[in-house]
Every structure is written in C-alpha cells, then in structure tokens.
Length: 544
Image (cartoon, rainbow, N blue to C red):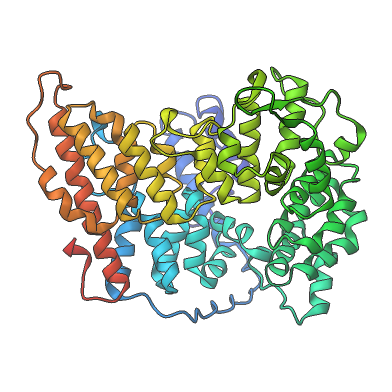
C-alpha cells in the first residue's frame, strides 16, 4: 500500500471491527469497493491501521527497576543434587495405560521426600530452579511448605512479580514480609493493631513459638474487640506451647458468645490434666462409671448422664447429638473424653490401664466407653493408655477392645515412640497380613525401622508366592517405594524374576509382581543415590 495524498482517509478502528463482525457482504469497509476483493481490502486496512495505532502510542512513564533479589545465606546445593532436582522438576505425572506403571521409579512421588531431605541439610535452592519449583508448588498444595522453605527468600521476590505465584506470599508469614523480632516491641504492636488478618495470625504464631506468655498477653489485650471467626483462629494458635499459665484466659473463653470458641477453649483445657475444667470433667465422668463387685467377675457399670445442664454446656459439652446418635451416649462420650486419664486408676480400685481396659462392661456400653478413652488418650498424648487400648497386635480383631477402627488405632499409635510404632505394626502385619495395614503404615516414621521393613517385604513375598491379585497391593507397594529403608534393596534381588504361577493365580499376576518388585528395587537404589548426592559424594543422577 503506497502512501500518498490520493489515499482515502484511514477508517477508524471501530468501523473495521464492525465490518469484520458483520461480514463484508453486509458491511463494506470504509473506502473499499464492494465485491470479492472486500475481505482482502479489510485485512489490508486493518494491518495499516494497526501500524498507525502502534506508531502513535506515547511512551509510558518510566518505572523504577525492581530491587535486586535478596541473598540466600544458605550453602549452595551440591552440583549432582542440583542436576537431580532438575530431573525431578522436569518429570510430570502421566497416565499409565492399562494401569501398569512399568519398572521406572516415579519421580513425582519422590520429590516430596527429596525436599524433606534437602531441607534437613539446610541447602539453598539454585536460582535457575526457582521458576520450576514454584510451578510445582502451585500445582501441588502438598509440596508448598517444603518447596517454599527450600526456595527461600528469592522465591518470594519472584512471587511479587508473577501473579501465578502469589500463593507463595499467602503461604508465607506476613505475606513474605519479615516479621518483627522480639525486641521490636513497637513494630509488634503496630502490626498486631493494624496488620491484615493473615499477618496477625502469622505474628501471633511466631511469638507463641518463642514466648508463649507474650503471645497470650498480646491476644488478651484485643480479645473483646475481635470478630468471632478471628477469635477462633487466634485461640487455635495456643495449641503451641500450651501450659498451665494459659488456664485463666481459656477459662474466660468458656463464656465466649461463640459456640465454636467455647468448644475450642474447652478442648484446650481438657488437654491440661491439672486444669479446673479437667477436674470438673473427672467428677462428672467418675459419677458415670463404677465397679460392680457383686458379680463373679468385677464389671464396669455405666450410668450415662440424664441431662446436659448449663454447667456442662459451658465446659464444652455439646447438647445436641448428630443424627442417629442417642443423647445420653453422646454426653457420656464427651465427659469421658475430657476427663484426665490419670484419675481412672484411683477411681477404679487402683487398677492399671491394661486391667481397666480388660474389664467387662455391662449393658453394651463397652464400645462407647472405650472409644471415648481412645479419644482421650490421643488428646492427652498418654502412651500408657494407648498401649492398653491397642492391645497386642496379634489379638483377635487386630487390636484392643477400644480400637474400634483402623483410624482409631492409627491415632493411638501416634502417641507412641517411633520404635514402638514400627514394632507394633510389624506384629500386626505378621498376624493379620497387609490388607488391613495400609492406614497403620502411614503413621510410622521414615524410613521404616528394620522390623517393619522386613515384615512388609515378607508379607509382599507371601502374597506373591500365593498368586494373590497383585493390584490389590499397589497402595502398599507405593508406600514401600517411599518408606522402605534403601538398604532393603539387596533383599529384593531374589524377587525380581517372574515367579511360577499357581494354578489358581490371577492370569498374568507373576509378570505384574516381578514388574512391581523391579520398580521397588530401582526406586530404593535411586533414593540411596539421592541421599549420597546431598552428602556431596561423587554420584551423578545417571548412576541410579
């Protein structure tokens, strides 16, 4: 298109858009003859107008250059580990055809474990890995805490420049801003009085971690003016460092106008065995349970409350049961759950927790009573009662009478030491197999202790030799890939071949079992290599 004075005036952009939307058959562009050439003329006019529009733009005002990213004082990641990180971040979850995963390790599932290991060693993330690391954390919320800790202050600097990564600011204390130190009393007071809700929650949590009394006093100063939903979140922060000094404030919160706040305050007080609320609950619960010595075998008699009075409600007892639950059993469970476990021995004839749990309970109250004791043991972190309620792992029903479900057993195990957990679950597997153990395996410390790892591998081998349906063990196999000690890899070499299938085995089961064990073995060796790389040994990613 030649420039010159003979050209028609340039059509305005809106006219061209209208002609394009209506079509040149119905609307001829300005300065264009109708006919078959109209569409081409429209495109030429739009191109020319686009150039004019761009050429006529005025430059915007200059903006300040971003401040340089902050320094990360942590030591750099060893080169081999940095290369491994790049491989882990480059891997993306895929859909395996036919449900088969092949023999290659699942790098997506190993990334959380790698992040936990690198954070434990205090390395800084390579700057070039930060965009991919933030993208991974954006896609997987389970990665965010570990990924952001590893990414460090530079990730927050990047998050302020890219809206896709704003989650990092929301997930960081104070929105990524440095919280005031303990000596900065004026800044602390200003942020508490004027900060956003998320900033105030982060500030309260940070102060609570280093000085529980100071955090509580800060909260007390503004408690009457806080919104109910905010009071609930602030009160929840007192779980950290909970102690007897918090009792007066929590007693005051029992009279709060919000039911949820009252319930949380009561729960926190019941976790303090020496609190006045715990003593009140002990009296109420003790009045409901007694020993009947008139029978041949001493038996526990239960008389559940006949009403939920105002004092019980104030102490956190909910008067209205869920659908399908009787009122009296609902009230009984709440009383027993909140009563200190240490008081039951004196009330029940000096018996130990094991002896109390072993006593028969009259009138079908056993399940309700023992379930409440389970919840109390978890809340009060009482290992003695947890052991009694769990019972021996080989017991019929795979637990003590109070362990009413696998979820309850898993919670009870959480109160024991890592070694005890591993040994109990190993005994459970030896007695009952793997089919019921999946939920219990999830509460055991990583990597699994030797007795537990041996029990899992032996049980998988037994299932394999029996020709069992292999896909039913895929969940346990996935856990084993992440949780078995890498030293177990040597024991797996004998299981890598395709076994002879029994006549009643599932068709093709042998091939699937061999494939699963090969993947497990390769994954364990890869995890060993990853650990060596973090320890700065001369081991590259290709060596796994």
